[in-house]
Amino acid sequence: MPHYKLAFLGFGNVGKALAKLFLEKRRDLQVRYNLTFTVTGIATGRHGMVIATDGIDLERALEADDLSKLSDEPIAMDTSDFIRKCKADVLFENTPVNYQDGQPAIRHIEIALENGMHVITANKGPVVHAYRSLKTQAEKMGRKFYFESTVMDGAPVFALFRSALPAAQLLSFRGVLNSTTNMILTRMEARESFEQAVAYCQRIGIAETDPSGDVDGWDAAVKVAALVTVLMDVPLKPQEVERIGIRDITQEQMELARREGKRWKLVCSARRVGGDVQAQVFPELVGIDSAMYRVEGTSSIIQLKTDVLGMLTLVEDDPGPHTTAYGLLADFVNAVTA
Ligand SMILES: NC(=O)c1ccc[n+]([C@@H]2O[C@H](COP(=O)([O-])OP(=O)(O)OC[C@H]3O[C@@H](n4cnc5c(N)ncnc54)[C@H](OP(=O)(O)O)[C@@H]3O)[C@@H](O)[C@H]2O)c1
Image 1 (spheres, helix red, strand yellow):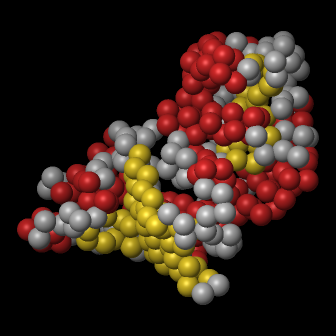
Image 2 (spheres, rainbow, N blue to C red):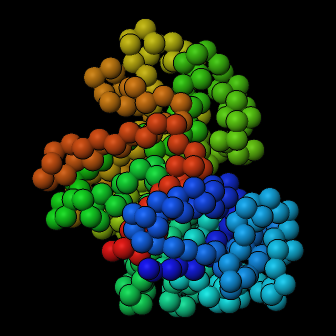
């Protein structure tokens, strides 16, 4: 029975949700895939790190304020040291995203691959800033670099093209990919001001104190860049995505849309034009004839147009760290059973 040693780099919302899901799915993994696992390392920024070659008690780790207290084994000096010393087969990289250059996550992933690990991440930075080099490095090492949860959380967008749609060519896509702006627009339809809707999103923990990454369309542009880079094989930086956020949508425009039976959505799109790709994030009015019309609150949608199937639509209802964790777990099973 194959046994895998796992390491978690980043143990925040996503890392902890993943640990809980591994505990829940332990039996399923064993019965359905003949897979067993132990977690040999967990590292954070300010909450310590632990390495235990005979396995960490995940229940205790989920409760711990300082992970360093969970083991008597010597603690690695820094994150790079941790990756080298944790002796894992699979590294889950779930540290915060750096939109500017993808670091230090790119370096984390390079070190893990150098040390013969599969790497699985929900972090968009390495995908938009280093996809080709990381993929090449993984292939050279005979390992996998998977990142399903970077776009639409657990919904299988990348895996769809990797395995379920062989030889299909993605011609274009359209979708609503940023949960926070969709929630803000949904709240504004219920006559809240933009500021009230942003404050609501901050209260429920889906918007940052500085919400500009979402409301100015940057997060959406990063997701578009990731999809174009990976699925259309055209390297694209978020800065190259034409982008307008939702800041300037007024209550008057909301009212007008309501009277016309339409809704504002922050629409992400890309399409092939000759050998190039045109990519955009723009607020758009959509009518009842659009599948995007019914996507409310934090839910998301993508419509994928391929050369073989016409239009294929995926809708993800009410995502959160639990669905992000599922994308990571699915990547793990796919990586080690491929
Ligand atoms: N939340 C979601 O639903 C979601 C959805 C899709 C993708 N993602 C992506 O998933 C990743 C994790 O998100 P999250 O919500 O879990 O973030 P989070 O709650 O802020 O957790 C981040 C974790 O990374 C640790 N960390 C920070 N810098 C580190 C470093 N240099 N070395 C080692 N550990 C470090 C933090 O440690 P301390 O706690 O000690 O500071 C914390 O444990 C992000 O890239 C995010 O964009 C999240």
